[in-house]
Image (spheres, rainbow, N blue to C red):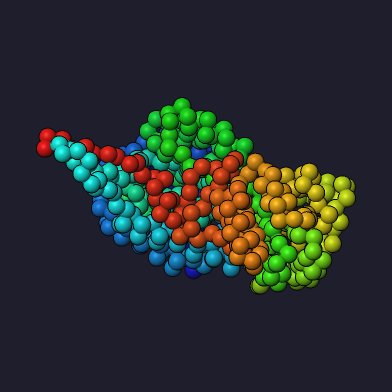
Length: 479
Ligand code: ADP
């Protein structure tokens, strides 16, 4: 199998070496996987320049020509799936099989947007006034920039780059410091399949602030897209205001997972396990607050506990692993702090509650807490770890009120069977995405994004393409 480990910055179709390097380590073993180029602001400016120069040629291609190249990129990601998955496992820690599933998921955005762009129609208005004709057209916004997080090293990039390229835009990406290799590997594949120089540029760096400054304030960048924490997102949004960029922000969540008393409990447990333990709980749509109606608490908790005790935690290269290490020591420290605080305040730990030192220092046990209350830190912060924190509620109205009592509104989940309740609760919950008896809700065809402080804009679906397009109105007179 070929190696796709690339370690330099990728600008204008060239691998640009930088003397300053930073280490990427394997969270399962602590070993250094690679030393990567540490780009500075000047290099980020060069990348914007390259994207600007590549724009006219790329924009002039027909949507079909761009789609052909995107489909080749999609196919190349799939034919290199195993190599990409192993690289991702090495830098991020998720099990190889889960990493391979992410490659498929990430690639699916490329295929999806190739097709979407070919069917992106404008409007011909019906006659409004006898002396004029009006058309509303769609155009790519121009040079785009993105900053992405480490939890989905492939897919967080493709779901920004694919719609941008499909719409006729060019792109500069700053990948996360912890997982730049997956980003650089797919840039290599893009280049191999013939995506022209300068259309995709990647600037790995430890100096997120400086690179972020260029990408959010450079007048030639017309669109900025970010996935990461709400705190950083708010700063970057302010920076984008200086040049009134079009923006998309996919920020933190605090997802409720509500189990009503009419739920199918086995199904609820099954879906919660999928939702909670994917990527060791390190996703922004992980169920964070498990709200269970009192009547079904015992049955739900007993079923869940016995399923959680079957989970296998091991390095991602082992067979049949349910989840691997957390990303770094800070992540472990945060989970430890939240669990300790909850226990001090009266929560009961039914299983787990500790680091699995026998596996490695970044492996945390599947943990089930009951007796959690809404004022505890664990109910207010994103846990980003394999901890199920169960609260209870009495009436449907109370369950909804508790679920909405947060400044965030990314994903929400609930389990119920009564179709009237399903309709009522769906319309009341303040979230951008709802999983109803479903714990897996991310697909290229779905509109991903949040309300409230969880963000602006949508990724995936036909709405994800519109984020990279401007609407232009043409009024033709003289009739
Ligand atoms: P997390 O690491 O929890 O996913 P962050 O918001 O810290 O969330 O990081 C998401 C991305 O934002 C990463 O690529 C990181 O390097 C980048 N980042 C962090 N701080 C800044 C900043 N001040 N300016 C620009 N980018 C930043």
